Image (cartoon, rainbow, N blue to C red; front, side, top):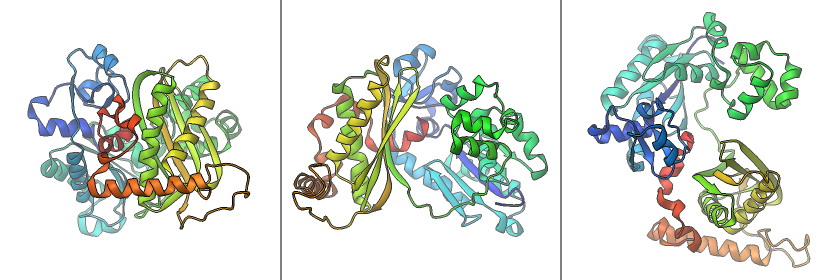
Amino acid sequence: MAATATILHADLDAFYASVEQLLNPELRGKPIAVGGGVVLAASYEAKAFGVRGGMPGRLARELCPGLQFVGGHFEEYQRLGKQAIAVLEDFTPLIERISIDEAFADVGGSVHLFGTPGDMAATVRRRVRDECGLPISVGVARTKHLAKIASQVAKPDGLVVVEPESELDFLHDLPVELMWGVGPVTRARLAEIGVHTIGQLAETPGRSLEGLLGRAVGGKLGALAWNRDPRDVETHVRARSVGAQSALGTRPAADHVIGPALRHLADRVASRMRAKSLAGRTITVRVRFEDLRSVTRSITLPAAISATATLAEVARDLVAGALADHTDEKHVSLLAISVSHLQRDAALQLELPFVLGDDDRRPGTEQGAARWVLDRAVDAVREKFGRDSVGYGSVALGDHRSVPDGFRELAEKEL
């Protein structure tokens, strides 16, 4: 952890919508949303009316009658995001890219070349504006957590430097939802005990937080509220999980909606794992309901999997269990699948028929081996002819594919 404020967090403002306004000057200054049936990203002009990522398009239009929907140009997002983050590389090699539009940078070793961290942050902002045509907000602090909060406070299109002597004065007046890991559910639980600011959270006894949020989450948030964050900027971060999610708008919690959506997500996740020669044992699903409350369910399998059909089946069982526990919920707005406990996917080891029972989901069974061979064939066809050349019929014909996969993956941060 830096002893002085040398960590930058740079975050492009309303990135996807800003790119669309850059590409089409007629959209500048107007409320726009990227997407269609679901808002994948919104401009600041639209956010002023309450439009947010993940919101059904119908509701967004009600909140903002003048809202314009535009399609996504994900290749431009990739190009401009890479170009903007590359500006940081001119100041330090210590860069940790979090997503397509944000990154941490440790500039402690560069002050003798480029001036103070605040000076470097100001130069980064000016260059991104001049070279990419995009607004970017930067926070500078001693820890990663505080730098990220500072960049949020700086938005839109601003710069905030938090010096060590003023850290807690700056931090403790802010709302708890600015903290990393505090979503709507955690915020509501903290509100029940009268905790609305980070300062109030800091003064809450650790046992109370752990009893309310669990030992791990309560302990972590308690430490962050005092700006205790020992994490360094990591230039090479090994993936701990592979996941994907789809915003559905407001759809019935029925199999004809959930089945194809989960097969589509499983196809994306499993193909990405196979491309990196990975398989995973722990499968987690997230279901978000109409009121934006979310529930998660997970299971750890005895053997690591990477087969699309197997992942879809496990995910479907988990979602069914979640819905069975919430029978009053009749609609879903988002589904997500992630796979963790990753390991290198070694050569397929076949099992004898009488080994370990009759679970055909294991990779080494006759059915598991057949699925592995089929997936490899599909991967080979897609590599040669493109991803849309082959796939599940129910997925290919479904209306949830109106947004290109590439953009869905880039836009997940907005959801």
